[in-house]
Image (cartoon, rainbow, N blue to C red; front, side):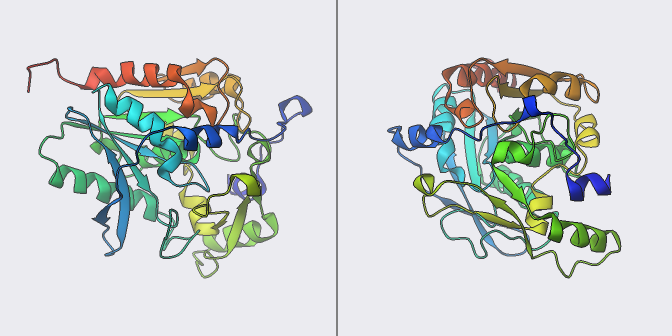
Length: 317
């Protein structure tokens, strides 16, 4: 497993290669006339002030929706607003540590498990600040889906009511992963290999070194982008072991992926997931690209229908 992590065991055949991501969905997302809710603070266990946006709904169900790599939560605004407007769930979109308009340190975190600790702190904040919270769902898109899966396999995993995985990154060695995620991510294996070996020996001195870069064309950059990750952020933003993390899920879970996903291999998700957990429902969204998945009305409809199972019937507590 260590050798798979450091070298990237996925060895795609030529037919599995991708020409790269279609970034036009980012333009579509910015063009949507949806006012952004203001950023709100919560305090993590180390005293850091982290931020999130809340798309309100008259519902005791809360969906924490995690953005993908290199981005912040802004591109999720139309999807989050569309879900909240149906009344099935409040939607919270955090800007992960190391990301967003003005992080304390861009592209880095303090230790590998910090992102999952931050999510647990956000969940506790919501439960303490909001008058009515019955169920919290952890969800995410792309690497955000990978982080949601990592959370499921962590010590916090049993504290939530469900998981929503949107084209989730399962890891370098997963059968679903195209080479370099379809050209999106470029790992620096010359750095990754010795740092991973050092970590195996308990040496953490080099974990702040950049080991992963993202190929976001200049035309699509916003100034909020995070184009390089340290080893600890790269590692902490992905499942520890996708098989074990999937097996840990014992609550309702939905995985959606577009049939035209350029980063991952959509046809392989069903068998890959079913081998480790048949509770996770895997569905394809016809015609959706990797980024376009969160812009499709069909995605909103399917997720809304799935979330409705958590909301009590009208008039019930």
